Amino acid sequence: MSALFNFHSFLTVILLGICACTYFKMQFPAILDRKTGFRGFFWKAARIGERLSPWVAVGCFMMGFSVIFF
Image 1 (cartoon, rainbow, N blue to C red):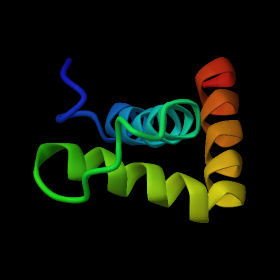
Image 2: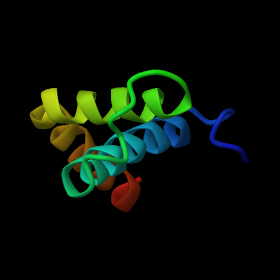
Image 3: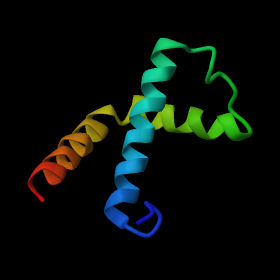
Image 4: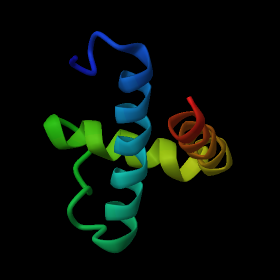
């Protein structure tokens, strides 16, 4: 089943995307320096990960817990 049709999988993909973009922005800042176009989407995801990092961490923990036990 595609992640678009399963809400739990969709949230997992979004959360992992935010975490990956934040990691790449911290390691390679020149990659995500454009704020418009297609790469702008990844810049915005990295910005969400930077500013809401406690909430993203809680979301990752809850996602891991739900994957393991449910």
